[in-house]
Length: 77
Image (cartoon, rainbow, N blue to C red; front, side):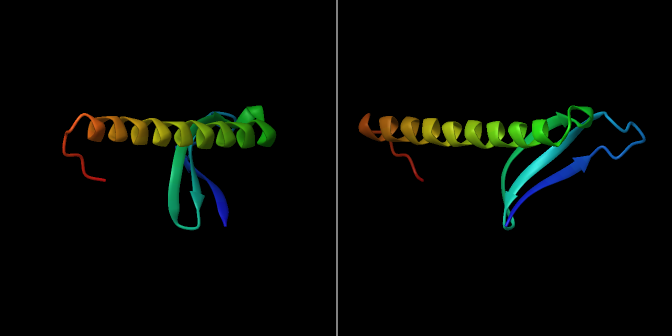
């Protein structure tokens, strides 16, 4: 299951900015902010962009770890 969860803040500001989580099953994939008055389509695009950004951060982290290993440093995964 893929879920986009509104984490708040839960105020009376109907169109205001909220914090969201993207989860697959129970695993937190990433977080992002979205202003509700932009609508559902914008929320889905923001979620997709946050997931893509997270993917690239993971790739960069792996690239750094591989380069550190090549340099002879002891790096644990």
